[in-house]
Length: 130
Figure 1 (cartoon, rainbow, N blue to C red):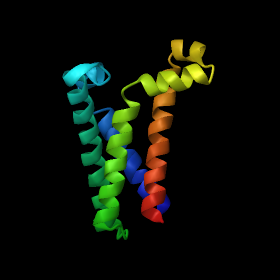
Figure 2: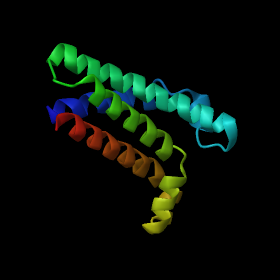
Figure 3: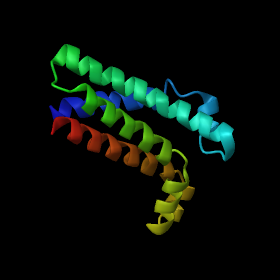
Figure 4: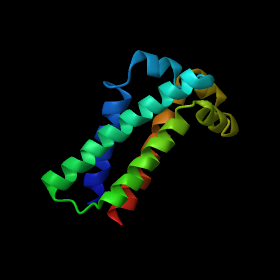
């Protein structure tokens, strides 16, 4: 069950982070002020919707035993962690403290960002499978 849940959440993540993320969201989700938070929350809401659709598909098509309260808790976790990670400073902080500034300057931040998101999805899938 864990593997199915993780794959469904991962597909939801990929859909929200790539084909469904607007140029405006990508450019402004880390900005200070209301506009930045609006872009960030809108993008995080897209993750909640796509991951929610994945969970619903798992329940309906694969007969996965996921309760509504557990699904809602997992989706809140996914949205909140996604918005936090996408503010960009957490990834920059990590890379600075992990002595990865050289890698950060050559594109490594995108990999650390995705690793953080996948870790959050892993936690959600473990929670749902428990």
